[in-house]
Length: 121
Length: 232
Image (tube, rainbow over all chains, first blue to last red; front, side):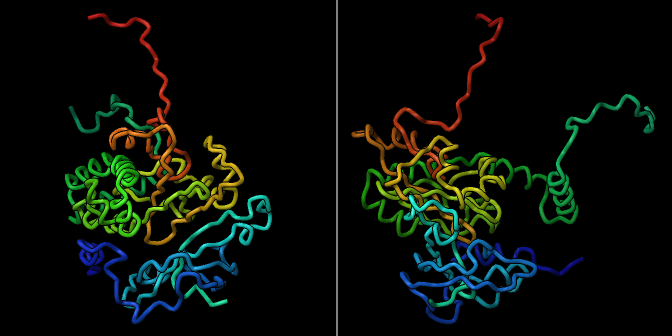
């Protein structure tokens, strides 16, 4: 019988929530703040990621600094010892999709990234 | 009756199941055999999960429309605000299902910004406060198209927004879950919290509809009257 602890996650999150149970584990303050312009890196994502291809290379603005958590690329494999800050980034739709109608140039899209995916512009 | 006497075996109740249903049954049965949970645990959890609906979230919005202090709490700590509508996000099921803990954030519509929620990666959804996703929310069609052609997709739901209202899509791809707080519609002046709760439908909370006085459901069920009704 496998010795893998399947209840670990439930135990650390019960009564706190997840990601809340990882508060204070990123090892310092967030690198970016609300309003910062950031570019989404186009890194290899072999095996698992939650960074959408449609955002790669796009420039947006940090809308919310959300929480600390292991990145999904690590957590998917049970590696929860290192955390990162997460950010909701707001993009102009016309910056994401070349065919997005100019008549709706103020339409936006928001989605969330762990810090490793962001670089300052 | 001998055990090989099966030519009168009843037809299966379900003729066809999808690959995912077969997978779910296989994993569930292995878990039960290994003693991770019992069949009774599974039945209880399924019933618990299936009875959750969007009403707590609708009440949260209605309360926030009426009470500016509560609205501040909703916007800054929706997890705490959930408790006032009977949802404990920190132990949502009592069964230890961490996928439901997550974080909850409320996206406030204004007269000039309309929010709509999608999860392009799977179907992330604030289940403890909204219940299960509608089937369309899980479809690749909705997930692929909403991020790219939001106005067209909203129009297919019957929501055509004027150009002066900006559409903001929220792709819920990490540990935050979202509900939309629509603008309180005209024609609801003087309404009670119960009345307001009724018009904040599930689709309004996802952002594919706007609340309207008189509309209390996303389903339009036509009533088929019995051909030979019984009279008592």
